[in-house]
Image 1 (cartoon, helix red, strand yellow):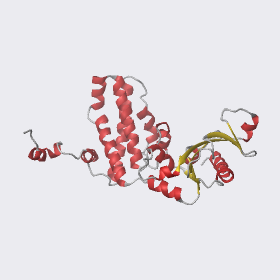
Image 2 (cartoon, one colour):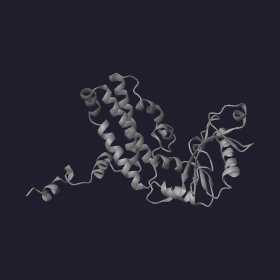
Image 3 (cartoon, rainbow, N blue to C red):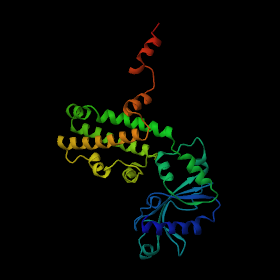
Image 4 (cartoon, helix red, strand yellow):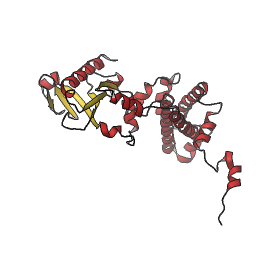
Length: 293
């Protein structure tokens, strides 16, 4: 945790105690972004999700500079020496606890990622922690489903001669785009292996590099896997090698952990395409095939 994170968590705690806690509508507050991950810089805003029941948008602003000495809010575009010296920049997402508690209300995946990895700064009666734990749980079935999808598509993009054929048949622009897709499936596989929800796309790399398990020498390969060193065939081939190296490490790991047997690619494809009319059940399909009258 950075020193700036400790300072900003103290500031958020003060704000909750002095401004928010007196309101009975307040259910809880979760610090997200850098204050949640512990990587705040001195110039970082305080990002947090404020759950209210019922929702009242006049309790706290969405985005403002708060001056503790006067308990006043100011526009983030206001400029003054006083605000620069004494103001605390706040960036809040205000959510309706009743709505987010409904079983049929779908939580966006990136919001699940934020809340599951956030810092629970305040929870009035324990309801918020219980809700977040229930709605961000990441079970084995979810993990396998996502790994199956990622492994299947990575095999389609990287194995056999697919990269070579894409370069020849589709040209550099589309071939490189297929590698972009492969990297996204690679990231999805790593998040799934670690049982972590996918964050917002612009925060994905930060979260990816912080995952508990990553392949050996991942730092040596990830930049190349995500960016070709040149736009010619040489650069393209180096990127393919980087992607394949990381993919092979993932396959080795899921076999070692017992999540898959000796053929993860085959198992992933068959499980994710469990339907009649596939190569492994064509005999049964022909036995039960319906013909037009």
